[in-house]
Amino acid sequence: MTISAIVPTIGRANSLRALLESLADQTCRVDEVIVADASNDSATAELIADPKWHDAGLVIKRIAVHRPNAVRQRMAAIDISRGENLLILDDDVVLELDCVQHLIAVLESDSAVVAASADFNNQTWPTPTRIWQLYLRHVLGIEAQAWQGRVVGPLLRFGYNPSPPGPTQIDWLGSGNSLVRRSAFTKAGGFSDFFLHRCTINEDVDLGLKLRKVGRIMFCPAARMAHHHALGGRVSNVVAAEDDLFNRFFILRRTLGYSLVRSFALVLLYFGVETASHFLGCVRRLNFRGFFAPLSGRIRAFGRILIPIVR
Image (cartoon, rainbow, N blue to C red):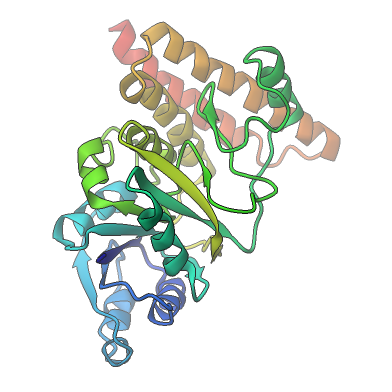
């Protein structure tokens, strides 16, 4: 079972170094690491050229990708990779020593499993807010905790909190912590190409929904890594909020095939609940800093969605 690690990066050489060191220390080594580099300096190239990786038995290939975009970077790396399986990672994660070994074990346990996602050792999966819990229970009829591992409504995605005792089926996978069969990735059509800007929020949910049509996705709590959320290369809160809502609409419309009216109604619901929750939180804290940037981003997203419809 050959594995290609796929890593998009942008100006975060220190984070990437920690990731590469953790890959070099794995009890089950990957066969190659493909780094898709959208940095505007030479730090990443210099890091990868360090002979210590070769001495450690780690094969690393770097490709330069201009105009940062995580999906395009991943696809460029996947196109030149050779592994039967794709270890899709962010550049700011650090794997525990046996992380890859546990992910492989899940894939090998059942041919119907097309992907396995690792857990995080430095954060827990968030639970729905009170407003969303009311929606889940009284609108969708989902009982308490039954939302875990699911993607529902306006693409509300939930992990497991607390983590289950063993591998458990899940509706989606993270694009920074997952091992995917290449054959399933290809059959599912890979990443979609309609994402806005470069941060490509929700591309992992989209890929998970497509893979789910091919086989089962498993959450593997024994496979663990830390996610350090490096600050470099991130977009503004306005752009992130715009991407979030815009991408939700197109996943609902194109990937799930919902009608125009249903897709728009669901993102409008998401806009209303998220904005109200954020506003109430600001009222409780008596601090409205950070409220208006996401609001303006979401309004911009509605403009992008509505203008072509009106025309």
